[in-house]
Length: 207
Image (cartoon, rainbow, N blue to C red; front, side, top):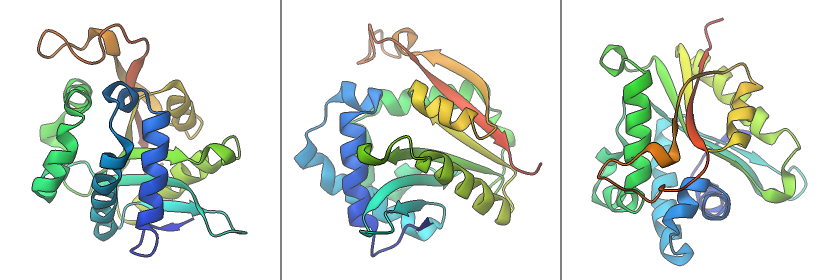
């Protein structure tokens, strides 16, 4: 496990693109074009390097990136990274709105100060290495790293049962959920008729 860096962000972005387009349920509904998605993914992942809050897992034999966990301070708005980031996020507008609503319902955002809550944005593992404990190792790493930086909590917006279970296995509790099919901010959304729910998972890392 090592911090995301300028040497690894492109490979991490490729893995992120593959995992999220293929497997992540909300991204799958948006059905982005992989060729168009990758340059934005590289821009996004590169923007995380300076935050010092994201990590990758490497295959010790090949040096390949096989897992990632991308994080931000909860008080940071990634949309402030610039126009290109805004364009990237606009491709997933319903997902962005859903995450905003989840956090609005189950967190007291006005009381959260910078440096207190670490927000896991994405976590993923190369399909060939799943069930090897990589996701759990990524979560445990970010909890240790966050605690060392003085954070009190880590939160994650989990969009699948697999991610909910992974965070649950690391001591996170479920603060609340929103069923996909119930979320219709403008009368309808890409999630209409979709099974499952998004879950807000929280862990106190001071204990």
